[in-house]
Length: 81
Image 1 (tube, rainbow, N blue to C red):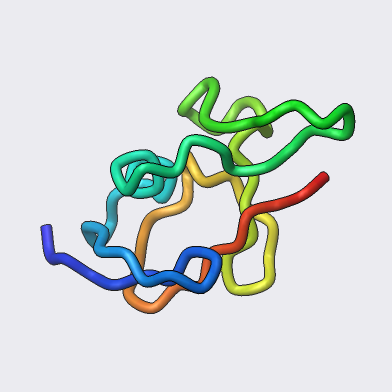
Image 2 (cartoon, rainbow, N blue to C red):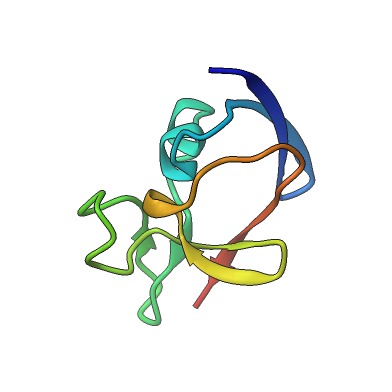
């Protein structure tokens, strides 16, 4: 897989093009993707797009990171619910 650069909350990280975004974020050391309405940390849970625990914003749109492939230059921001 080709290595690409993505931006996560203003910081560039290296990921593998086509891998799922959640995997790239976890490998880069991010353990919390958002907070629930009740204030609990949320991250990857099901890993197959069934739940909504891994929501992040990519290029201004809210997506499930476990089913979103990485591509060069994507801008990722963590959700705050």
